[in-house]
Image 1 (cartoon, helix red, strand yellow):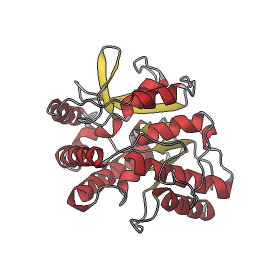
Image 2 (cartoon, rainbow, N blue to C red):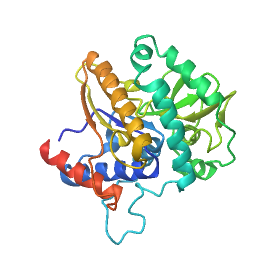
Image 3 (tube, rainbow, N blue to C red):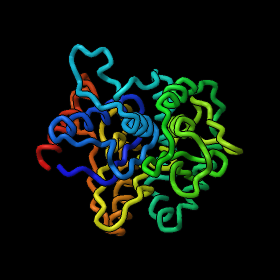
Length: 293
């Protein structure tokens, strides 16, 4: 398998982060690829944490039956209980229904202004949250990362409903830790993160992967890992709605990059036994990808 020029790591909560770590570990184990040397890494929500860990030199590790944290990513992610997943699922389902499959084509064509309006209206109706991700911010801060042009972290300006990609040219000033913390702040459960004069929330409010924000041009190889595009985490009708919206967004964003001349590979979680660790599922897929490539 060829090392991608651009690695895109999507949203998916603790379970999605575990799957991301498993896929990366599986590929690395059987191909020797060092993802930390990719030209660019785009991270959203859980993907932003995994991206920061990679650039800090934390290698993804394969699952082990004796590992008590086998459901986690490269390093343990913030704990999520049923209330977090329930609220995130409800908000994601409503947003997916309102702004995903119906608005996305028009939004993509018109610079996503309609999408921003829909998101701003939805975020304005979300109740205030008490929990913070300060511990996550402190953990990422210990990496001592700086913006060197490789990392892109997707967030959403809560008031305007627009996407902001920290680390990209012209983006507002922020630390990597602030950007990761903001990208993981699920609306209605975690407090928005204030950076400068604005408040920012989870980048998945805009897109499950924000793949179209990748700095990709002609003959650029893009590998996108999209946890929300498969049967991980939220199940039932709500989970189906989120997956459908995710796959619709992936099709549009893949097309956008292909129009720039990029080669795009998208990977979503495969169906698996619910009792199987998410990282183990991802590792198995990563090994298969490495062998196929």
